[in-house]
Image (cartoon, rainbow, N blue to C red; front, side):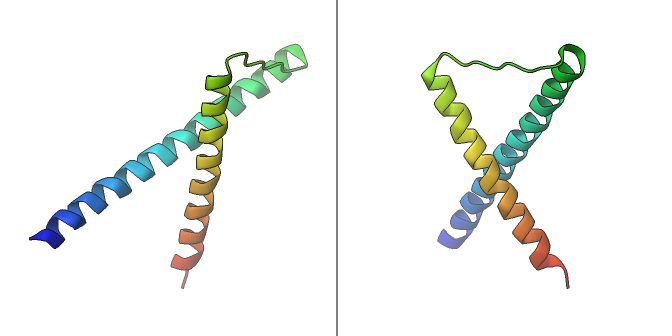
Length: 81
């Protein structure tokens, strides 16, 4: 019975990890499209964040997205026979 609860919690944690990771990667792709659009229309991109809390959150999510991307890469490589 205890093992069943542990498996259920582990499954939920895994789902949360993948949901947050894919959201971070999706946000990165969306931001890259916006940057390329600005460069194509204006010739440059200027991004300034004055709020240090938001800046730290963005840096943290970027590090998480990098870790998640490495995790996906390693999982894919290991699954190839």
